[in-house]
Image (cartoon, rainbow, N blue to C red; front, side):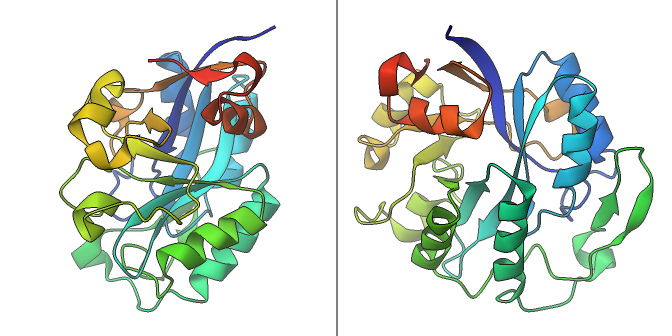
Length: 245
């Protein structure tokens, strides 16, 4: 039986240098549950090291936590990448790390904290997670597809790090699964206000870096179950599944 699930598919944790330290995996899960969300995706910048902790924390609340990351291409376009398993996101992480130059400067860019589901700090990631990878948009999307994941172009309505602002258009042969609009645009009006995405599935997400922003906006999915495969079917409008607007 299908029903509506509230999904925020773009949340950061304290691993992202621009995120608040209060955004531990456990705190993100607890706040998501308090906001009535059914599905969340943890998508830190160029890393998936806090996803397993969030998944473990989510089990206590029957919250579906999807492992992912927000990858920055060499064109400085942000792409949300989502996976069914942490093994898949781990392979993607290794691929990204192999093409991510630089070392983080915490005093300049912020701390990059790896934590467990009990709010214990395990360490800090030394890589320059805020930076751009040496990977093209096509290389990122192709790798995600090879792993069975989903690629969503981040915040396409924003003036920075969006595919439209960076390229001026969405390449028609780029095999992305959807585009994300921010809270600035109502989902039902997104295609009118950003004509470049007129023919693409659209979702909206909070892109939360602060606890108060979690669940600020979310996408209603009509699904048979809270899984990534069901979300994929909804993006394609398969057998009654859909993104509700």
